[in-house]
Image (cartoon, rainbow, N blue to C red):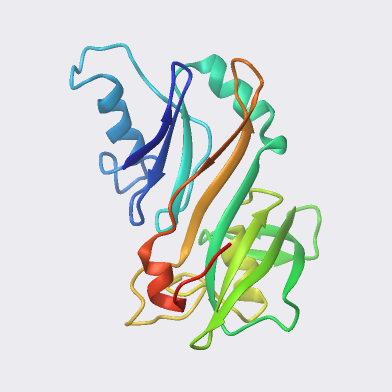
Length: 219
């Protein structure tokens, strides 16, 4: 993982695809959390240094993830998470009739851990995804996505339910033997620093995979 920013309170990385943010029932060690814990302990297993998870990205989503280096910083970041601005790049099949728009629904999760939209507000959480079409090419569209709310699988579900699943999304989209990687990347995050309250804006480079799909582009 590439370290995007680090100070005494936070550690921000560019997570590659196919890597879990934190442990699951089937994977304990090949995670961003495990790798970064070893990093802050400098290979010393008896070190008391640790990191705290602030938020997560799906295993197959790449991009910016913030970790805290102390509990105070973690609590501060999570408390002001509604003021955190998260932007993604996504490549979808097809194109939307409108070049930009907003998708809003109540999202719920079933027993099989599949997220879906529902009209039942008692089980669903209000979720809003804002998108802007950057480029259309080869039957695909590159979208700049503003995640107004941060629900599990939100972007993937919203686009799939509109008939435009994300390229390479094996769970909510099409099983595609050509596109092995999901084209969803968290490229920018803006938040208030937990120590001094200053607004920070951090960005990552666009993965080459996206230009392979739609060609060169500018945001």
